[in-house]
Image 1 (spheres, rainbow, N blue to C red):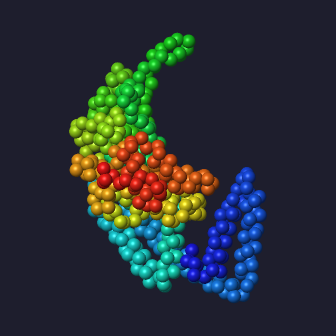
Image 2 (tube, one colour):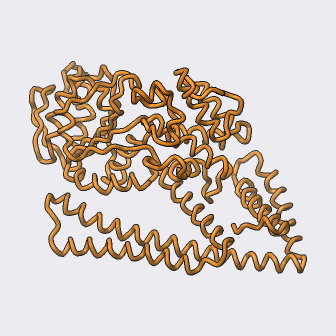
Image 3 (tube, rainbow, N blue to C red):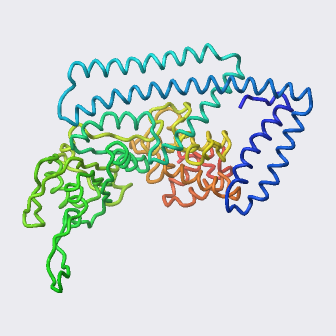
Length: 483
């Protein structure tokens, strides 16, 4: 909405309008114990807006503001449509390449020309969009209104993306675009990264949305056996007799049914299985796999099968039970190994962590894009999360180094040993606040998070990070660098 703070009448009308929209949603909720209360409040707010509009002088101000608002909306919608059109063109170009990859061939000349044309059209659309928007901006208020409207649209889109399982940041789109052709050929994929960075979510999105198949999901743990993953004989009662029947495990089911299998935290799986996996990773749809657990019976691998593996960074003091993957195993993934970085990775300390902020906002936004937390709170908690993620990942550069103790900096160790305000942690915290009905503040939720950290020095570092963003006042006066 246009910034009306300089005019008290317009500021009041804007606030009443926002509250009315929220109140109408509650009043329309079937079964809500507060629906009747909201209905009464709705009538009162509507009456207040009518009273403002009845005054001739106020009516002129409101009409002018509404006209300006309509101009803002038109400019924002036109800009967003161009963004979507450019994105669609790029997706069409990717689809051409993916189709060729699924047929195990390179692009023919006409396809290569089509891909170049589509991408060129997308680039021109983006340039024209920026130029047209710049031409339409008439003053600071108009610009701010357009940017605010575009932000609300982006939040609604991000909310829909999260409901499908993954926030499509630039990093995620790039990995999907590059990995998809190989996956359609049945080649294996390895996603590496720190905890909470959405590796599993990305693997599930690739399987369900991009490949269109429900995956088998196997979580890694130290005592899982090859028989549990591939299959084993079990005693069953058949016609009154007890017989031994071979029952396929998740890996074999995926092979025979033509579905992807996700091996989550593959480096937590036992060496015995990883040795078998070396061979499996070389197989492709159409080839046969001799099932050792079923007397070597051959199984033909159906189209659609692919292995998607995730692995945490090989840092034993952080991830218990994690072993270093052999070079032989890693090499089986070839060029299909991707490092999944935390959101906003690579930004300078002073830069705005837009991806963390968008994730936090989208995770608590309602269908209209309304967010329960203030812009200031979202920006500060997103920055705290961003800083903690970079410190955890080992950033010792300008700005981040203030949160790394001298001893750790000398040793080249990360400033946080075991704990981090990872993306999924950030989402859990803001959702707790937004879903508390005003009973839990953001500061309280962050305090609970820090209190639950087991590592004493990590608690101190996280406290300093949060204090740097205005949270947890009065706690953790000593900085890590003083140790």
